[in-house]
Amino acid sequence: AQRVTQPEKLLSVFKGAPVELKCNYSYSGSPELFWYVQYSRQRLQLLLRHISRESIKGFTADLNKGETSFHLKKPFAQEEDSAMYYCALSGNGGYNKLIFGAGTRLAVHP
Amino acid sequence: EAGVTQSPTHLIKTRGQQVTLRCSPISGHTSVYWYQQALGLGLQFLLWYDEGEERNRGNFPPRFSGRQFPNYSSELNVNALELEDSALYLCASRYNLGGGNTEAFFGQGTRLTVV
Image (cartoon, rainbow over all chains, first blue to last red; front, side, top):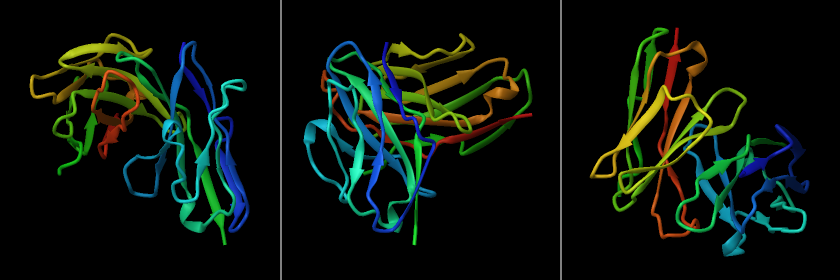
């Protein structure tokens, strides 16, 4: 069964501090992992995907198949990073659903 | 280019009533996903439609149903509404490449309140 777990409901840090939002997944095949973000009063939108191996807004995420994790990291948090972050998983192949974790609210304080 | 649009924006219904929510995907997107976002529960997967067919459904009772039309727009129907159905219902569309690696674009959601 597909499952995404985000163990923290809230992560509170000060500006300039490092950030790590945790995501663990369960999937029997080769998954495709994503991070989506929802800023206040905006739509949910894609932040990054593991297959692109890119850094967006200073965030990176590495897929660790051994630990079945896809943690989101940023070395220096900014106040504008405050938002709701969702980890998502889609199976490979054409007929797999896209499922989300419960989300982590990141609050960056000045 | 227009994004994913959902209607109505807000809705208030009484227990036992039926409701239909609508979603128009981005042009060219054949997949439509429905999610329920209840307070504190994240996005719960409801239904996935692609090319007019239901491809998968989440752990919701049969009173949650839907369909996808030839123009790829979609409806979500909920019968016999219960108080716990109160939530934000999100629709997302995606271009199905035959693999999973395409971005899903979300609508603004329909806020359903059951009283």
